[in-house]
Amino acid sequence: MLKFGVSMFFTDYSMGPGDLGQALEQRGFESVWAPEHSHIPVSRKTPFPGGGDLPKKYYDCMDPFVTLTAAAMATKTLKVGTGVCLVQQRDPIQTAKLVASIDNVSGGRFLFGIGNGWNQDEMENHGTEFKSRHKRARENVEAMKEIWTRSKPEYHGEFVNFDPMMTWPKPVQKPHPPVIVGGAFPYSARRAIRYGDGWIPQAARGGYKEIADMFPEFRKMATEAGRDPASIAITVWFPRKDPDLMKRYQDLGVERVVFNLDSEPAEKILPEIDAIGALMAKVNG
Image 1 (cartoon, one colour):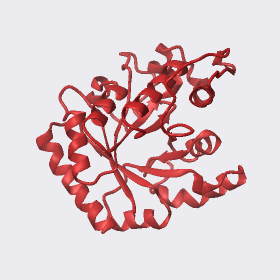
Image 2: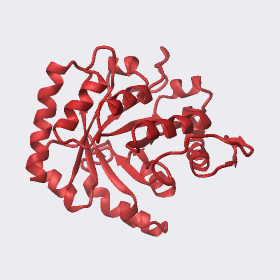
Image 3: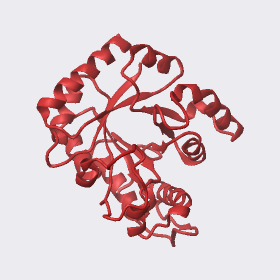
């Protein structure tokens, strides 16, 4: 069965995460996802990947760990995920505690979607150099895994360095919530293979029109790296609402699809999720 989820930039003018979570759970959705931007600098060194002006919701979005906690508290089975958490510009010790905490309060329903970012201005404000962001993100993830799985973790890298410490809680999910690496093919695929439990590719990007066409190469890359391709769950981001495409994803072993919702109030969002729900029913029977 193909799992269905949605993603929204939660703002002070969008449908609230608790209300959206309840509506999704009632309709049989598997997950809700929240992206993050800590801020958007007025200076703009990097263009918006989607082209044109940066949408207002990027400036206005709330913290994902707060909104996802609200969604988790309003639901019982719905999974909550960051889509994506910008780990390259976060402190790994504090972020590890956030992840473990939300996994505890949600009863083990957290999905840790991560990305390495595109906004150079934003990450430089956090002290992250754009050119070394991928290595810093990898070290952050490796350090967080140590924190989640060891009673006295330590880590020594180029960007992250700490001696043995004690920090709790540990995540409910063992060994830790799935680390699902987002981004474009082939670069994010390589990162997912190296240190991820899953991969979040965009359904279409500049270099390809349909990510399903890239899956054979992804599985080849995983096998050559010594990973079982089946151990890296695929979550397709923002695909076309096409039942035949959804069934193709099913046949190719995709775990879930996630659809984008605009930052709008309930009266506009509920018909959208009803339409996606109808697609889900058609695909899954």
